[in-house]
Image 1 (cartoon, rainbow, N blue to C red):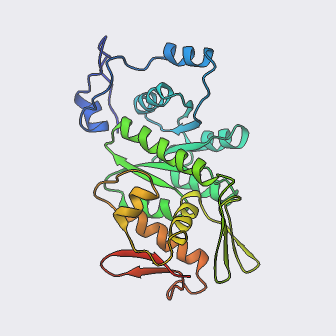
Image 2 (image 1 turned 30 degrees about the horizontal axis):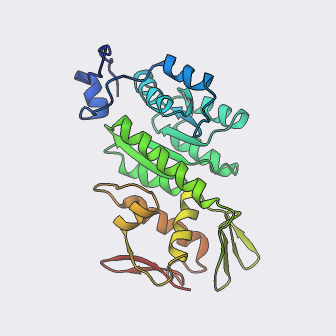
Image 3 (image 1 turned 120 degrees about the horizontal axis):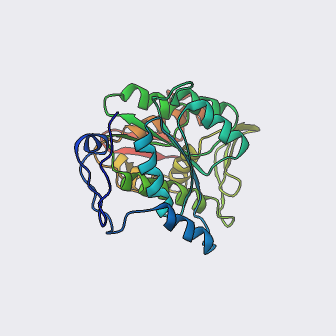
Length: 276
């Protein structure tokens, strides 16, 4: 994805030419574009940030546009352009969420995600990938990414997904949450931990959210579309493969025999349910 951005008009965005190819159709936005000055005034007024986001994207134009949209919503945003820099920032500073392109120099996005999870870093990851890279999407979700967006994409929709992922994470960390049990499986909503007998099971943030949602409604059947709306917290149009991949990974981790699952059952032609 290479191209130049047209100059911003005084009162609105114009999205033409190659930038349209990068992001898709024009997105209607408020009349005043986000600026660095508005970001600074927000900081000066001591308005609490809703979170910190690390944007890892080698295309400078794309990174700058995404950064401006995030900063306008109040997010503390750091931008880097290669995978090794992303790993360095996560180690030294951390982040509440990572927006991660797959096609990166030095260290690619899949390897960044793989190293994060191998090091015990459960920071939510939203991958950015080309529409025709389905195999990389499946692999990325399999190694621990929480969500993905295909290019071309709308920056406004990306911000909505960032909000959804962070909001759900905050809701699930509510200390009033219960401990769920199913056979020898114990799920602590408070500490976000899972035990099978005496064995601790490591889950990604989204795997845990999906497990809690299913286990909180034993016997209830959910379609893939319902799970996208209720667990991912937004309407995801057209592709439910992220649910399929997460269910597969979840079974590998929590089921003694993933081929004959005891808890996470498939209801053919409908979706999934959780049995105690």
